Each structure stands twice: as C-alpha cells, then as structure tokens.
Image 1 (cartoon, one colour):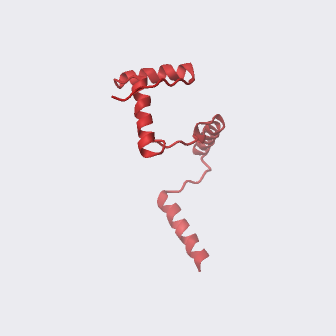
Image 2 (cartoon, helix red, strand yellow):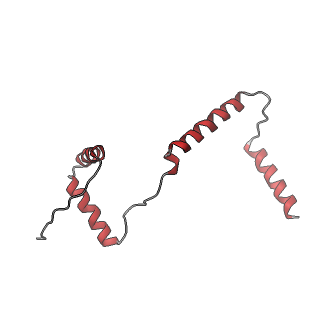
Length: 102
C-alpha cells in the first residue's frame, strides 16, 4: 500500500463548497477528485483538459453581444431594411468571387 501525504492549498470558499457539492453528487470526496486529477497529470504529463481563457464570458463581450442583438432587433423591425435569403447571399458571394478571379 502506498504511503499518503498531506497537501494544503488555498481556494475560494464558495468554489470549495461548490466542488464539495458536485463531488458528493458524483459519489466522490474532494480528496478522491484531486487524486484522480493528480494521477492523470502524472500519467499523461499534461493537464487532462483544455485550459483556456473564456473571453466570451467577460462583461465587455457580453455587453457587445447584447448591443448587437438590440441593433438586430431594431433592423428586423425596420420595414426599409432589405433582407436576403441564404441562397441569394450565396449566389451574390459566388458572383463576386468569379469577378475577382478573372
């Protein structure tokens, strides 16, 4: 049997509580969850999931999307705005592409 060791680190209180809740729902303790993580890191020599920044979740980007939706709703309500079907856009694009390749 392997000898165990104690690891201590700090974590946001709310994050810890949420993780405890999720682990409990999966029938795991936090110790087991972290041991699974450490085992995979050790065996695979990498973080076992993609670690990325999520710029779409930043407040400025959320506001940009909300502003764009507001603008789209205004345009959709404007009877003077010309709407094109997907097929019309495709044909227009292909025609322009042919002109630039000649």
